[in-house]
Image 1 (cartoon, rainbow, N blue to C red):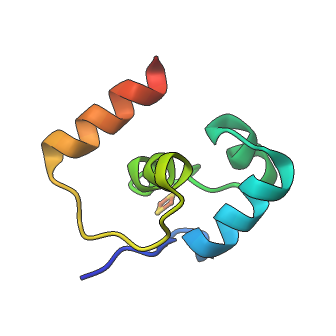
Image 2: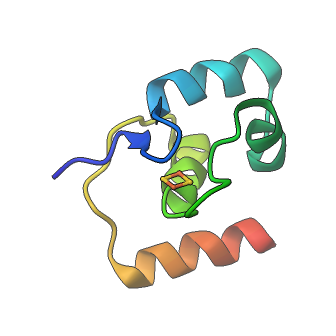
Amino acid sequence: MAVDRCVCHNLTFSYLKQVADANSANLSMLMQLTDCCSNCGMCTPYVILMLQTGATVFPALSASKVQALMDSARG
Ligand code: FES
């Protein structure tokens, strides 16, 4: 099943990409602007990947890929 949104807030990654592009937003700023990633957090690695690649639809990520993306966001 494809992953294309922050389910908790019903925010599509396509919409989030538009907001990120319009504001040159990083993850932190995008969260402040839209409230994405602020409830369960399951969408966070996908939003990170969206910011890195520009893609807006993803296959479900493996646990190791999720961990790698979360680690990359922490610096
Ligand atoms: S899916 Fe985005 S916070 Fe839950």
